[in-house]
Image 1 (spheres, rainbow, N blue to C red):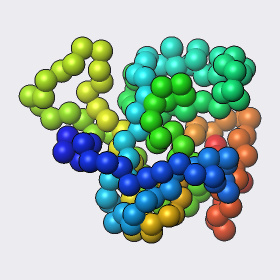
Image 2: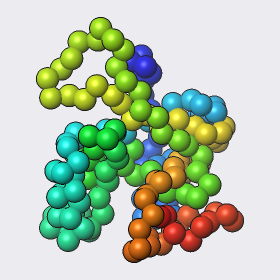
Image 3: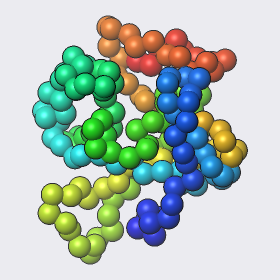
Image 4: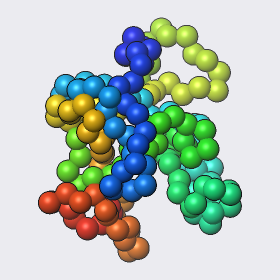
Length: 161
């Protein structure tokens, strides 16, 4: 895993037909190949819940109410809204070409204080062609307030939750 994380990611940010900006491959990625690591500031659930409300209210100029959070486990969330990498531009799709997996640090690896012991890695669900938009099923929990989906897939469910 550590060796995979050190390799340059085969992706770039570009305009997306799904939602403003998206992530696109710069070369073909084989099924189960690593696409990118999702990186952000690690925080407890309670802090993430508070920050999400702040973001949704558009408290940061130019941020537009979007937030980019990814749950690492039951206790930790990675927030890439203000400090993260290009993986935050992965858009939702009801028929995604990628999946996520939490990869834990191997036993015996040195621990860096303040860091997390795992990584959220985005892998190809199928072979992905060069220039194709990278998509992922956000797997939002079912809630009364529905979030409209714009993925454009023939099998689009119409909502992301």
